[in-house]
Length: 251
Ligand code: MF3
Ligand code: CO
Image (tube, rainbow, N blue to C red; front, side):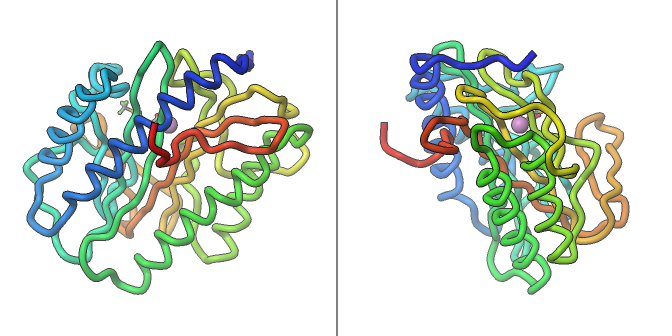
C-alpha cells in the first residue's frame, strides 16, 4: 500500500530532508585525498547531534555506521573504514536521518582530485538520470515512467543501471511501498498521486549491471570491477510538480 502524506506530514518530511542534505554537504567539505571513510562517518554522526536527529542506517538490520561510503567499483552499502581516499576516486555517500518520526534519505557521488574522463561522465550521467526520473514524478503519470526515463537516459550514455537494488517509498519508515526500479516500461505500475513521497536512487555502472555482495555481508561491488555511481533524492509529488525534499536550503 502506498501511504499518502498530508501537508503537515510533508512539512515534517521537508525538515528531515533538509537536515539530511545539510549534514551530507557538510561532510562533503572534508572530503580530500588521505581522509578515511571512517572519519567522514564520525563527522556525520557528530553533526547529527546538533540537529537533534538520529541516523537512519545505524542499527538498521545490524548496519554499524551512519553513512554508506562506496568508492569506485563499490556500488552501495560499503561500511566506513580505515580506507583512505586517493586522487581519482569517486565516492558515493548514502545518508539517511530520522527527525520527528520521519525519514530523509539521499546519496551523492563526489569526486576526489582529478577523475578519468570515464568517471566524470559516469558521475554526471547518474546525476542527470536522477533528474530525468524526478521530472516524471508528476500527478497522473505512472511509476514506470520514472523507471523508464532513468534507464533510457543511462542506456543512451552507454552505461547500465543496477537491477538488484531499487528506490522506495519513504515516510515514517525508511522503506515503504512502492519499490522504484531504475528500469521499466512507461505507462505501467501505479498512477502517481499527490502526497506520495519517494526515494529515487539510480545506481549506474560503467560496465555491466551485474553486482555481487562481499563477504562482509554489506559491500556491493560491480562484478566486472568497473566503477559505479549513485545519486538519490527524497522527493514529494505535489500539485506544483515534484518537490525535492533533500535539498540544501537553510532551515
Ligand atoms: N539508502 C539506502 C536504502 O535506501 C541505504 C540503506 S542500507 C543501510 O536502502 F543498511 F545502510 F541502512
Ligand atoms: Co534509499
